[in-house]
Length: 238
Image (cartoon, rainbow, N blue to C red; front, side):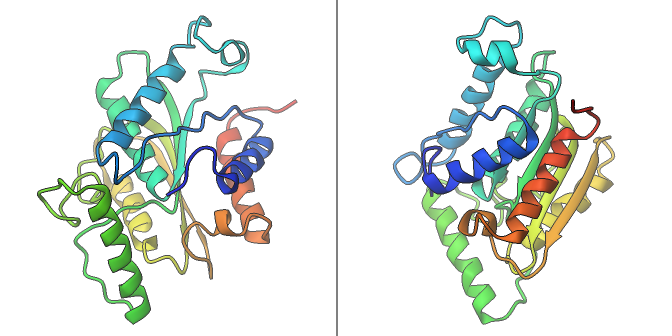
């Protein structure tokens, strides 16, 4: 619903980059309904391929050539962006030929659905129907329906080929999609084909993408700190 140039997202991005001391490439993928699924995924894959053209130090962006550490590349996104990040990691794992080395992935309040029954109170059920309606607008050509579409029913799909070694899933306690985040992490832990590590951080009494809506809150600062620590894990900072 926003772009890489939206002030609310750019504000959060600069905070996260400052805390993590990293370089971020924010993908301005084309959006529905003018550009329906799977166009946003294809745009994001093109962006990821562009990033990796700099591995040899001869890519089109000199600043990336000079400063990026390609031994530590992470995917991240919130809501729909988290959904896209997952699919980029899956595609990287499938198509990797030594050129797509993804260290880890951070998913903020991922936009996933599954066939699990909704047994929440009326307001939560209404919120879920609203989000399902959004997906139907974004993917009008889907023949399987929201709960069967593999683009969004991630928890119900095979994740053994995920192309990264570490995953951090962040969920919000009042978010109707929180159970999907927990289910995603549980599925990864049980996956016999994936040998990485997954962790979950829950922020209680907060709603979907609260960090975008309330960038100056204490919980947002804690979320950014957790994200930065995840990226910095295993490194020594001078």
